[in-house]
Image (cartoon, rainbow, N blue to C red; front, top):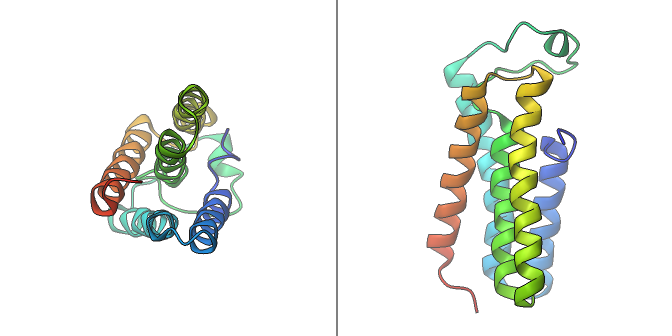
Length: 149
């Protein structure tokens, strides 16, 4: 699950979302894609501000790229990304299918966060902070973008 929430994966999905919105002339979807990148940037800035060390685990010892722990970038990125995709699914897909998609995406968000603690990459509070950051960004996107047609 950590691979699904990896920042590179999240940024690629954000790009695909923004491009799709641009091609389909849907500025709200473009805004959502760009907002994912902004959320990832905010997560990185918060890591540098808080400078919280990661847990002392074998997983962290083997990490190629070192970064601070709070908030979890995987978790914040997956929360806004898959939350936005669920929101779009609920508005643009047939009702029965959209609920199934939204449920799966909610489970992905939950699983990415749990996997970060399970692997030893983060403390539980880092993941909770990531969920809160992602949910706050998602809420802002939905409120700023307004109702979807």
